[in-house]
Length: 164
Image (cartoon, rainbow, N blue to C red; front, side):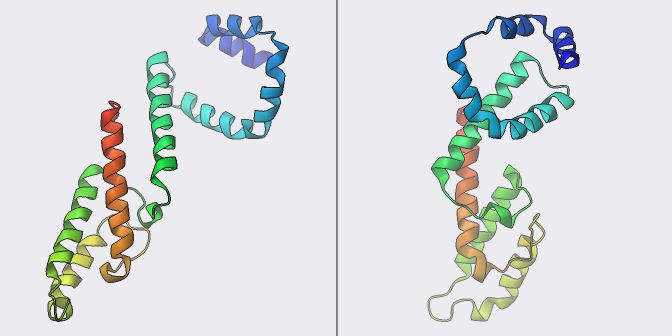
């Protein structure tokens, strides 16, 4: 612990002084309540500081980003995010375009029966995205729509808060 204090005094002496002045016993029950989550917090902070990204500006930006993401996840409800390893904005647009094209291929009477080659081509393009497992449009269409709508909502929320 003394090594941590010495290291903190090198990085940010003013913060160490503030921590030493904090002697309010009313805060102890709150600290006890968060005790079980401290390992996750410590792992998170270790990751942040290993990146050497700990200026007040970057930490504030990162905190705002993570708060926005946490709030979004609470509001958005369950989404099948695990269908993809990750999706950037361009890949999300491609996915949305594939779903629109797939919907346009539907014919009122015969459906996709006569357009199987076009559907297979769309599925090939879909599976070029970073999927976690092979996907078929017919079976996954509803889930993919949820990913697109959720991804767009997240993108707009982050843009509204000045995040990328």
